[in-house]
Length: 131
Image (cartoon, rainbow, N blue to C red):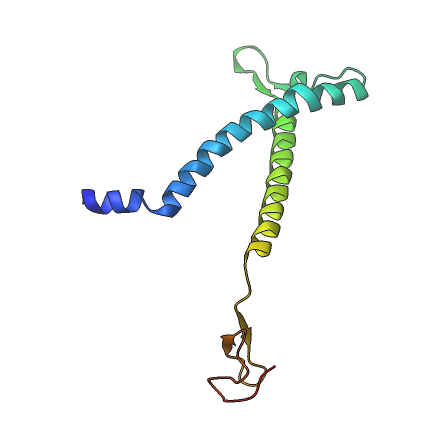
């Protein structure tokens, strides 16, 4: 069982996931700072000094009062949108780099639709001439 776990834990995908989680945690701190320390103060200036962290609804009174801090929720939604957009841009850039690195070594036979070597002049599957 220990050998099985060791094999599972040391697989490439597992290590990639661990690195992704660690980098994601650090990246979250950067995005939180970007939203809370840069965007929210700018939005506050534009809106005339509104502090989103103070936006809340108090439901009930006394000991049974509940506070819904929807301004904090709004900040977290902004965090999510920014993080999703940055991740989208990163993946888009990585995919662009990946396409450049992948060298085309095969082509498809126009007659039988089999995958053949890029330099082939005759399909080995249907023996048709290919360009």
